Image (cartoon, rainbow, N blue to C red):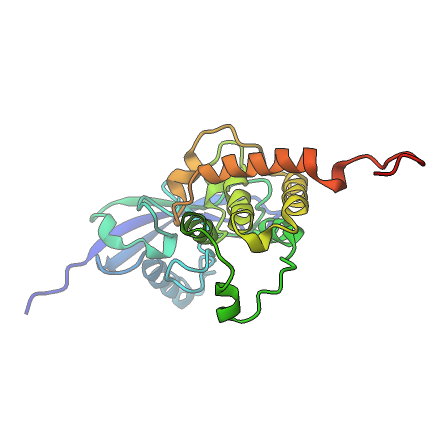
Length: 266
């Protein structure tokens, strides 16, 4: 029976005790990891050793470890979620690396994402942008009744592709302007493309755009870094759609029109 192949790698990890504390890189050895281990399993091994020696373990965010929840918001060697395309940090495996490699880990960097501790950041700004969009008012009923609303197949597929966004924030971390427009445009597109999303169409895009700006996110300058690192491969076409939706809302929404003078009501 063949022995299990193992390797040793060096981790340079950003350590920061709190949002108001200075941070620094510290070096750790991950010994005896196997190629089939996920990257987070290797981190777990390192943390077990730190705890056994009475040291503070490395704080990092995770939940599903299946690329669904979007919580694993860390940068690996300068790239959000690591080198794999269309994958989250928890889906990165040690077979990507070789014995003796040095890997640098740090949190997503953006003013809107303050560091809580080590590799854990506060992404509540994205939640507040989503909350500003509100809910749809159309009563869709049960699955059968909802499916009775006719939706053209191309629009249904485009809406589903946009809805695949997991809100991880990788697009923000990759953008030189720390823009959240790929995330916001995906959330706007998933409703703008469907008939159920039409009643609040104008109010939604205006409110989400306003909240996005209030959170301190930058603007899009078409760098396309966001699309390159998105684990769900959300497309830039959604940003173009959001811009069209915003322009339409500014000119067509009753919320943005001046009140008519007395005696000149519409």
